[in-house]
Length: 197
Ligand SMILES: [Zn+2]
Image (cartoon, rainbow, N blue to C red; front, side):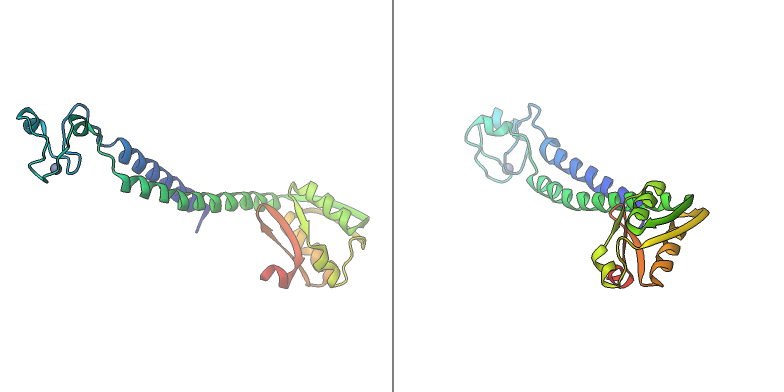
């Protein structure tokens, strides 16, 4: 599903929830009317005739005050409250997709790199700065396939898109063992098998 679908469903669920809760609480106020507190039958006539018992459902209000109650629909309050959960969840997913999309946009721009005799770790730092993204390297996994932080690297490239650059650098370093992905607004570098999980 696309980002906008999540954003739209989050918004409609939230408005639905607020609407339901508002309606449940304030949708049917007494506004001076006299009504049965059980079935909301109009009790004006009965009250004037001196009766507090509902001719419709038989409920005895007992005192006049109870005929002036606002009609609260508690089920609407409950459903509205429950709707907050999927609204929040959709909003969260939409937000994560949005921040990932921003990272992909940054990786779409082209940069020049000139890394000469740089350690791998430093190169990643510099690459992140140039691409304006945060890069997390799973060093433990890299070391497990023999790629150390301080392995010297050498790359001089002009006008290369960020995503292709990552592919290229990792391919050269590992011969296909390493890969990258975007997760929670960050670029993650690890072993291909680990990222596939
Ligand atoms: Zn009644």
